[in-house]
Image 1 (cartoon, helix red, strand yellow):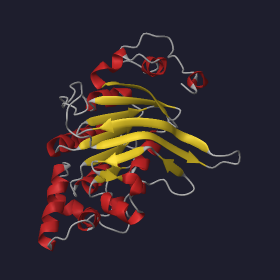
Image 2 (cartoon, one colour):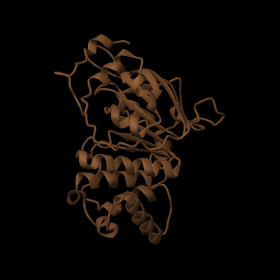
Image 3 (cartoon, one colour):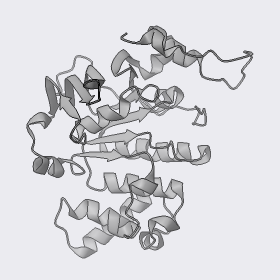
Amino acid sequence: MTDAVPDAAPPPRPSPQGGGSEKALLDIQNLRVSFPTPKGRVEVVKGISFTLGRERLGIVGESGSGKSMTGRSILKLIRPRGRVTADRMMFGDTDLLAQSERQMRAIRGARISMVMQDPKFSLNPVMTVGEQIAEALVTHQKLQRSEIEARVRAMLEAVRINDPDRVAGLYPHEISGGMGQRVMIAMMLIPEPDLLIADEPTSALDVSVQAQVLDIIDDLVTTKGMGLILISHDLNLVSRYCDRILVMNGGQVVEECKASELAQAKHPYTQGLLAAMPQMNETRAELPVLERSQWAGT
């Protein structure tokens, strides 16, 4: 884990989940994801429930805890023979469980976007940067060519890319990993969705550019009044960029808290994760190691 993030946290935004009357942007109840194995189906997400307003929600946990499966389930990206069930999976007034694949294609990108971990595996190597960002826009909107070019240029500028006209003509292999991740963010945000799911958006980046990319995401999400689900294994990161945090272990949510109160976490698993993180002024001879079997089924 890295502590290479800004010292000052972005100002928190009020959440509509604190008893207000505003309807939730996302309402997930009893979500389960399972896959077949030679010994029968195995659940990797085990009945989690949460709501999300136009706020920043962090989902944290170790590898294999079910974080990414949760994000992919919202967009119905779990392919057969995986199985997704839920008592309720509402996105505003839309029942995601009832949507066909064709209907989901109209929702993905236009209303819910997802930034994946590594741009090398997400960008099309035979299309220019500008063509790929434009494709994310014209898939959902009919616009004049001049307007498309202007929107692409403005979006590249919004993700802090210098000389956007030149970069728009480059191919993915001609740009760095950090720039590639900014291009991915531009692609996901140009249709102006209501919800952005960012799955480990900085895991493939050098620490020197991680904070820059997260600042861009936070600025654009805040400016546009979107909801954000930030999936990460980095507790320090989500505590600085999110309003609320869900801690997952073994496919379950073991704790939910305000990001500002993470240091006062009550669950032993969360306390163990916090204790295992190295500090800048570390004085311990060795860091404690979590015994994962200890928390199975908690």
